[in-house]
Length: 422
Ligand SMILES: Cc1cc2nc3c(=O)[nH]c(=O)nc-3n(C[C@H](O)[C@H](O)[C@H](O)COP(=O)(O)OP(=O)(O)OC[C@H]3O[C@@H](n4cnc5c(N)ncnc54)[C@H](O)[C@@H]3O)c2cc1C
Image 1 (cartoon, rainbow, N blue to C red):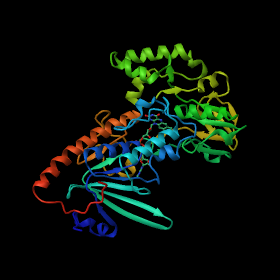
Image 2 (image 1 turned 180 degrees about the vertical axis):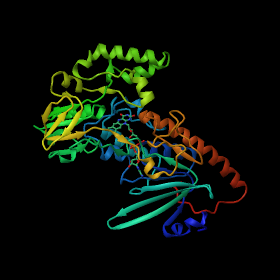
Image 3 (image 1 turned 45 degrees about the horizontal axis):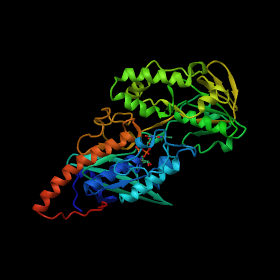
């Protein structure tokens, strides 16, 4: 194959398997990558999907707890072009969601290249192409491949890596310490005192699950948090907010939401759940902080089954000391301390993505960068944000693709070797 790149790269270029991709390379086979692939399929654009895990939607299949259900009603979580089956409940279970994603991939004939972890991707100015390097390991064999393409779609997600906080003494703690992404069920914690660090949706749901398995959780609430009921007057709170936003300004919707939350849940501050000064929607829009949609944890907090405790000072072998001086005997720790994007670790680019691994421009402008670079699923708006990005990206690439293939048909046939799925 002709070396399209600068001389400095000459040796590196010939030392690995090199594959030309006709169409975009999509990095990540989660819901965002699948949605983009499906929309590209509809546009008639070929593509290659690279996935580091051995399955689609690895976050859902491998890194979530058993009792998980979608937090939002199904109409806000389905991907473009293929709705959920009609008999799915309002809040599909994790298993149902995975089944849906599997049939989605099958329906649109999306066959990702599994076990291929993208190590680096950079735009080559000389050739005007992206160079995407992957490593896959099978037993003791390590294979390196370089994909060369004109368009690169980043779909590695907002939750690619776990955040593990640096807390004094944590490494000396004698009991089990797991991140929420490793937590499957409270069964093995039966009869144990468990410290749950974090009070977002995961922290609340893990605490509830621990209670339901006869463990005794204490949940660390360090900062202010908005807890809203999942439903108000039998209507999804999220749906109500979306409806109100059509006619009312955001500040007013926020006020009404808080009024309704107070009506349904009462004053949650007396249980140690201080509300932020900013309203829930404004906080979500400006800081990306998702409100907690309560599915039963609050009742357990009221009854004292879940203990709410302030921030942590330090851990010792079998205890945690809190900032108020209180010391608790604990057996295990679950870190519900969130996730982060891993884009900065592999994408060599700093104009479109910021250092925190999110596009610099906020929604709805963060889907398209320069030189054929795209981002899907970094909107802090869950699956509906990912769907909207996916449709825009496919349309944008599809327009160029159609114009160029039409032109090419009129001139000469394309002789380049193509491995993309078409
Ligand atoms: C517990 C939990 C519950 C949630 N519930 C909801 C909900 O109810 N509704 C909602 O709208 N949103 C929800 N979300 C938000 C969630 O982010 C989305 O549901 C969704 O999974 C995002 O899809 P994604 O494809 O962008 O990212 P992911 O699902 O994280 O997929 C990204 C994929 O990229 C792969 N990858 C990462 N790095 C590389 C690399 N270097 N090379 C190759 N592959 C790579 C990963 O293995 C992964 O498979 C929830 C999130 C969590 C953590």
